[in-house]
Amino acid sequence: MSYTEEKIEIREMRYEDLDEVMYIEHASFDMPWTRKALEEELFSLIKYYYVAVLNGRVVGYAGMWHVVTEGHITNIAVDPKYRNRGVGNALVSRLLQTAEEKDMLGVTLEVRVGNETAKNLYQKNGFVVTGRRKEYYENNKEDAYIMWHYLIPVECIE
Ligand SMILES: CC(C)(COP(=O)(O)OP(=O)(O)OC[C@H]1O[C@@H](n2cnc3c(N)ncnc32)[C@H](O)[C@@H]1OP(=O)(O)O)[C@@H](O)C(=O)NCCC(=O)NCCS
Image (cartoon, rainbow, N blue to C red; front, side, top):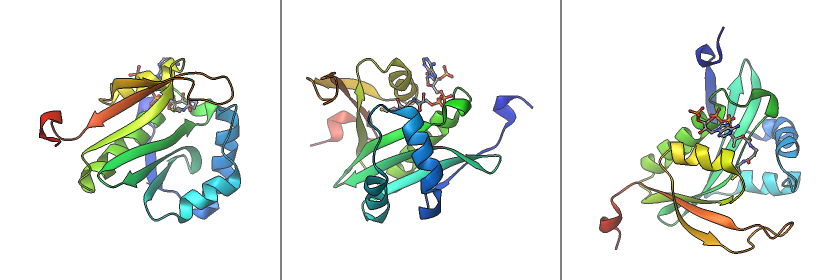
């Protein structure tokens, strides 16, 4: 079966997913979130967290805060063994679908300027670079691009 024929299920993240999500987090980032931080995210009322499930296994996750009229993507990561087969795309699509359902005006995020893979993923899903935060990341003082996906025309935002 080719990758594209595989059925990627996106569902809300549950407490029981935390072990698999923490594994993905550690495999994906130099400065992974702590388990406690992720637990707190799950109990927050203004967030949406999803996992991607492939053949019964959690292979990725993504989260977004709902801040007044905006969505702020907090994180997205895919198990290295399951990358490049559409899992990241499916997760971003789900976040954007939620943003539309909740009548958000747009969705924003920060991404390391050197993270071409993630930048491509976001651009492919309609995000554009709108700014840059100097030395945003503590570990290596790397800059962050600010990206936005507007859900209504910019001229309509007052
Ligand atoms: C970024 C990440 C989530 C992408 O997940 P993925 O499941 O591999 O992504 P997909 O297979 O859905 O690919 C979607 C798009 O991402 C981009 N992309 C994916 N892998 C890429 C690579 N190796 N190089 C360049 N672009 C890449 C492409 O635009 C791709 O679209 P295409 O296949 O039509 O070319 C994954 O690489 C990851 O977990 N990285 C480490 C954590 C991270 O950096 N998170 C982002 C924090 S802001």
